[in-house]
Length: 544
Image 1: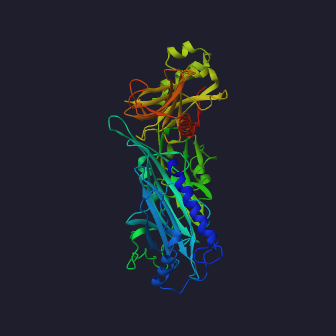
Image 2: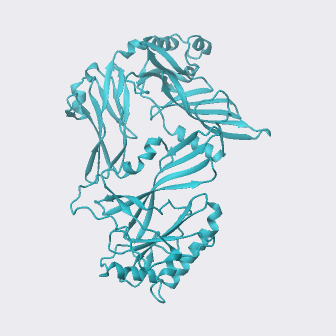
Image 3: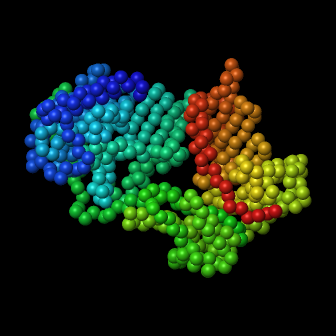
């Protein structure tokens, strides 16, 4: 994008010059409206087109790189005032530039719609809007239309960035909203690697990236807008725009502005065990938790605790509810999130609770940690090693366990961690276990320089160090009874003993490998922050 900065500045200067000369208003600055005009022109499209074409010099820029520009007439916001959209896609990097101009209500001229200010420069690289058709979502609550485009930027044959963006034109101003990002690269073996993030930089799956538009505009009417583009240098009097998307019926189904971004997940746990549930939603002003019995009857938290004496339900920060001392009678019941906002409600999917005697199945592990603490071996690393336990027990006054179905197979994993820990070790998982043929199997054991954590997306985070210049950070998931690497960050030294930074997807026998990608220190720190942002401290049942 930087190599097009000169052009962007030239374009901004053209816009500013046009604004000061007052396109369509001789000797006066162009009027910019803060609100939608109350009166619309009683002009036919032919009359409006004549005004738009008369102001050709405002929007038909002479490109300094001799790249073609195209224009189309349409009414994106359906306010009866037609717009002219001029755009150009250029170069192997696929850079797109565009500007909107809308007819003034009195028909005297046109106004620039980008940020409502003709002196403001637009994006260096717009999404690829020069398409024959755009998907449209209509929000009846605000009478707004959103048009989605996928932007593509290449910085080489093996590396590119894509994004989903939504264009909204309202009250004479155009806005772009970023919905999702994806970074694509190709290794020497031709394999594709995709890193997807939401607008805040949080990691998301490829599936979430592909469905970002439908999830953002869930409940809105979906249609299409056809566009017909004409090259700026070949203006024709016969040009006619394709009809814009028709408005829906006067009383369309009202969309729900609440979008649930994380549903709570079901849990299998032991009798008397503790667990937690998390739910998030965009557009919600309030979150209430409720409990469902196997027949679907809704209970308040107080009613559920009365129905299951001794059980505790506690609301925690960050859209979390804790379930403690779970009795066998809770088997088959569910936890559900109820969001409210702007007069709307949204219910999450129910998270079912399956209760069994997993404490007995994991009994040998629980008993081994109990003996370590009760026997006074808390700081004895030799004792811990000899029994396959974590030396991190030296950092806490007690130890507890939690059960969480991390691989979603209906059987909970056992998480052992410290209680009353020293600062910096409060979220470390001492040991992680799963069941195979009803026997506990160790998945991970933390040591002083090799530590494991659980994350809110049911993955595991690992950090290790081989010295000041060598670090290793990894997101892992349980698959087939073992931990598999998903994405890895690590550091090394080059031939001049300067630190270098790498990113890699999946496991390899050595590091760096042909699958490793060199990245900047800034990118390394950003990715590391994203990995660590989902680390969660489990709710523990005390062992000793």
